[in-house]
Image (cartoon, rainbow, N blue to C red; front, side, top):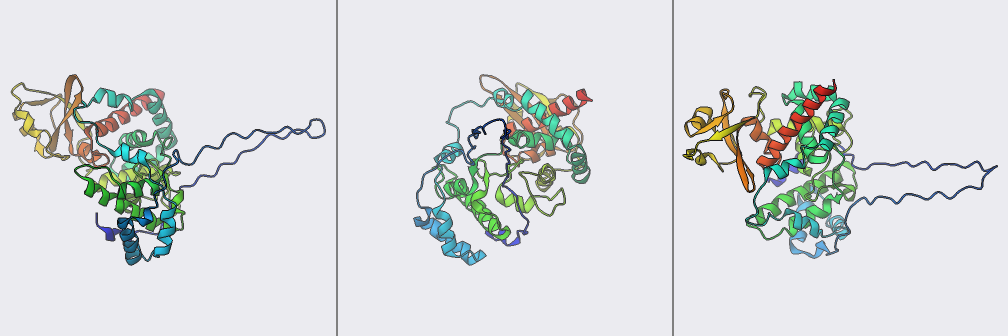
Length: 370
């Protein structure tokens, strides 16, 4: 990730703090003795305690602080004070570790977590409340409302579960203490870029960087954007002068559509994103598996290799998608260019198909409620 992109950040405010007001019942003092009102326990802003490790003494962190001062004018003393407040989050380290080898993938088990009544009902509610905004985004970007609704639903159940980790805690942990994996150096470089983005942009907009909360990987808001993407691809879709992905459904909707456009979504591609397919026993089609998250092949090529979708494919490029089902037979699908653009949001066939299926289920429920 180029480190110079931060110089281009717009100075828009990302509002991430929520204010709660509680009104206690008032007794009639002339008749009753005022009763003591028992306050409900305050929910913690974060869901962990973390471990103090004094990141500021780590050699790599000292180099990072020096770079912040050199490139962005952040004084070393200011960075040192900030890093004294950060905590090492072992939960984040454990959660980013790859699944144990040999553990079979199971599409049916995975999808059942997302294509279920609670999420579908919440999607209907979200779509109904934001009907005009979704229609405006679809007209402007060419991304169907059901895909935007599917992504926000899969990510956070429409803002109901946006994560309670302090963003700087998990980014610092993963930037300087990523688990031992083959891609460790590349992942640490990525998270250092995200940590830089979070610190510098918070400083530019006057936000307390320690107030930023999100997922165990540092993603923020209803659509779970990483800090750098908020400023590169976030959209002020409600026109209030700031990009607020935690509190503005409109900004979340516009930003998701803008992300997909930036990652290859094409307005004029076929409306259908994926086609269930059967495959021939000769297995000539296997050469099309594991070739990357891109639509690279014509329908004729796939058909000639023994892939038979359930309908004729419109002109365009496609890819072969395998959805493993543990001990059960693997499902095969033919994915379009726009299907593969969803995998840029999360590099997983399971994820992209869950977005498609959830969006479809919500759309069907919307029609049934009309």
